[in-house]
Image (cartoon, rainbow, N blue to C red; front, side, top):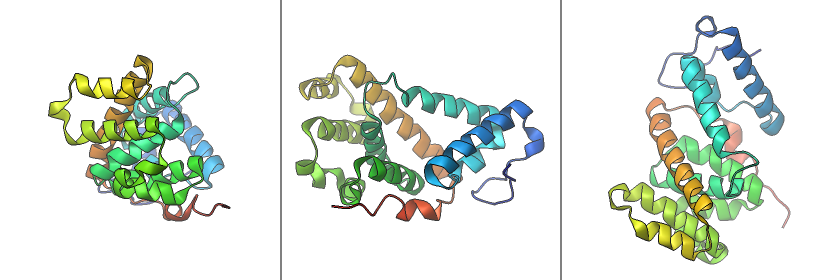
Length: 201
């Protein structure tokens, strides 16, 4: 079991006594998955149990976008997350989702380029992936100007309406998380900076 003994954000530390046994079981299960996949626990998930019901609601929402019945690939969704987080200057989300995308693509250089300026990577991305980047940037930078054109451009790139709706959900999800993550300012795990960087050419 993990003790809540670290100060990792601008907020107070979670209190185990404020969590039900069922909520704490969800926390521990999530911890086990991260330890298995990464070898460490993402610091954000040590912070969010401060409001345990909302923490579980967030996990359920995230899981609805990342599962075997989805329409975009997980790499495409992480790519959207990197583009959105770059525009929003969300250091924590860039750090963690950049790590995820490096692991999926096995191409740290390309992920770095996208995190700096996705347009610098246009010649290295597929038509479909570049269209998703353009969409993610536009709806993040110009939410008041979204219109039919954004849907048309995704259709022209070959996406069907299921995929377009999912792209909208994912871009909205990362804009949502960027705002509250920046507010609480979690400390990024040192491991995320070096993880998934060394691959054979």
